[in-house]
Length: 393
Image 1 (cartoon, rainbow, N blue to C red):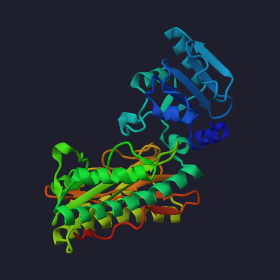
Image 2: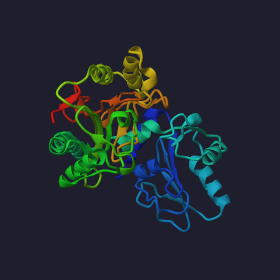
Image 3: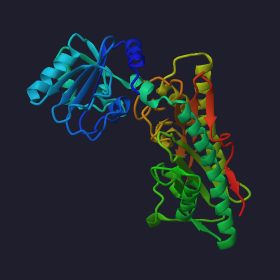
Image 4: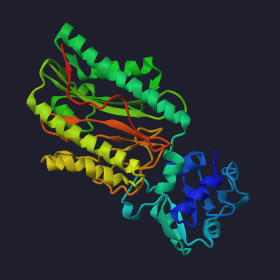
């Protein structure tokens, strides 16, 4: 349900004269989510929400009722391209600063969903176009009570998946001397199915050098055995198989044997310290009611690994927003790949997952962090891993 009062309040707080939501053939998933407009529409549509007053609509004659569910009785129907341009001019008339799903210099491509030509069109009417990233967060990335509950339920089941996977590895090695990566992956997927969970793709199970590939694709073509003396990384993500539920996403590492070699322990301890520094940065900011941006959490985490001399081996951002997709549409924890200037806000969730990836093996420790409506910071999925898990087989 589109809450006009809340949207206009957010526009006012962000310092815009209005928010121009636009899509063409499903290219702007952010606008679709905020407005609940179908991505299957075949023609361009615009919906302008001014900071005060009644919203205005621009739709094609083929799809005249496409925005009828949204507030606002002012609707212009176009057929010719000239009518479209005149209609857009009418929508933004009087506005000087307009929010759109735009990122200057494409600095944050997660926000930049509006094509350059459309931005040029809006600017031709005397408007400055600014990024709607923080607006999007409030109406797309913020969880309601049911979504919050679904995350905590998924978090427990995902944590249980590690007990299942590590137990399966132990049993298979005891019985057969080894177990393949894909077999462990299949066992985790069975756990998800048995517990009415769904995921957009199977988990990563990587042994030895495969654990050093941050986006390793566990598959038959590259299958390697896990056996005594193996180092294993498992990254898994899933949500309840119900509408509007949200994901949980975690990574843990293990060693098959009763004594973890020092080389693994050393790298794990650096990564875990970096993870904990990121968590503490968030806790400190919300305890002090202080503004916190995504890049600041990344910097706090990354500094630990860089100071330990492994900065070049931490090759990705610290974390990502989590929502109905595992990589959601709120602020990411990123000062590396992008400078994430969006605020970390209440009722949003994100991962903190630093890693060090060496040719022989890689360590990543991933937790989810959720800030509730009161500003309390929750680290979900059980206690963060404090040492490399030992699989006794």
